[in-house]
Length: 311
Image (tube, rainbow, N blue to C red; front, side, top):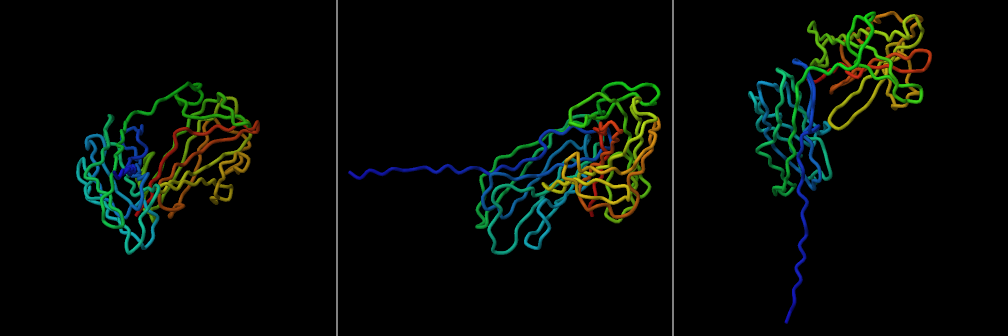
């Protein structure tokens, strides 16, 4: 008798997900972005998907390519309709092997319309390998909450601001209590808001009003300005110096240079962050500002303005 042993090889399904899976933003008018991310994939050559959302809560501003721009792939942003984006697709070109591992394949920029909650769901998903064979795929959807930002803590009446949206740390990066209020604005070609869309050639102005903690009014110190840049899965940080130049930042507190030296902090510090055409590059920017009194503590905003730059 001939015995045959059959060994089954488990095939891991690719995972197409919306990231982050849970987003809380707001209020109405706020802009934010979500990534379409593929993981646990082998030989991904092409894909397509639709996306569903509640059009009374959100609107899609644009859909952009997530794969680094090269000549070996072709991206179709799809059709944007109320509550649905259809036929978004991305494919490699030529006789090449597909993507293995993980990658961000698209990014969607949204604007909040109303307070509320909406699921963001994937639909009509097809993933193909380099032989044209459909890949088994699991889906991970997302949830978005549009809400009025939570105001925590109190500030003295001298500040003229009734909420604390700051984070404070000591020179050893340990959290401390130093309530401050930050209010940022972005102006793009005359339109102003906290979260804005811009094209690379738009004229952009970014400013902040900082209600200084009462312990530091009249004291000396420094102003700090940071930009967090996100494009697909790539994330970089920059700081601005006193000559208005931007430099890469390694996220080490000791290497963070001042954007401005203050001899005497006023009650409210009006700060011009940027004015001009052609920001750092395309992508999403979060602009943080803060101040570092001479005692070495750092107080910075927990609620940065956001700028989405894209053609």
